[in-house]
Image 1 (cartoon, rainbow, N blue to C red):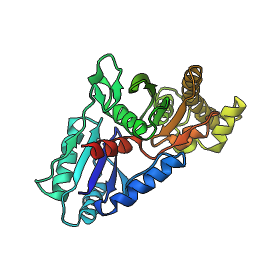
Image 2: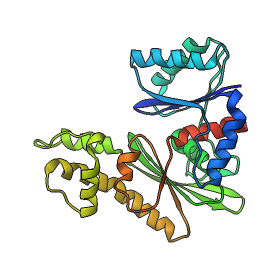
Image 3: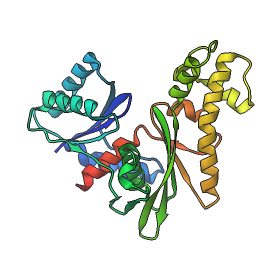
Image 4: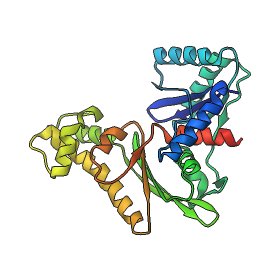
Length: 282
């Protein structure tokens, strides 16, 4: 059976399609990627759409129907956008596949396989953070991981190896890069409004040079430095315990990556990778 993976974030819906006819090849490619030290993307098709955009809705339904070719896929979903968006996605799925579709709405749990949820109240951990940790641990068992997702919010999550598996230790949540830039513009009288696309090479150079010679780069560099500072501080603290591997994902990952002065590796979407791991285990 084909699998449709859906990550419903605060701003966009991200999806990936695993074609059952290409499953063995995808698994082999994934194993090869990990053997070469890289995290895999074990799906054949992927995309993203903004919430509540009619054109995007029609495009999604058409694309999914074309990929399904009359069949009904197994659907696995992680949602942090709330019940209204969830109901909207349910409607999309019915439009695409009919009323027989039965999506698996993932919830945060106390454990998944040998990964233990160390949150004080496990169910209070955001499902995106939990599923992303499952995906990272599935392919990198036995390693200490700093998992950074640069989205609407920037989250830093820690997974450590234990004698019989791994433990999600917790982490940090801070405003995402776009939120930082927007809040600064809305709450000051004379500063320009920037977006993530404005945090390019000039801003990254200003972070490394500890200053910028114009207001736009100073704003962009300041927000980038705040993101990079949280990540690098966490990475150094973890590094004092032993080897640590930093994984960077999320829509703003490329902008944040330019400001980091430490080793890291990027992945398109760790939540989708975690959903894939859960679907394979089911």
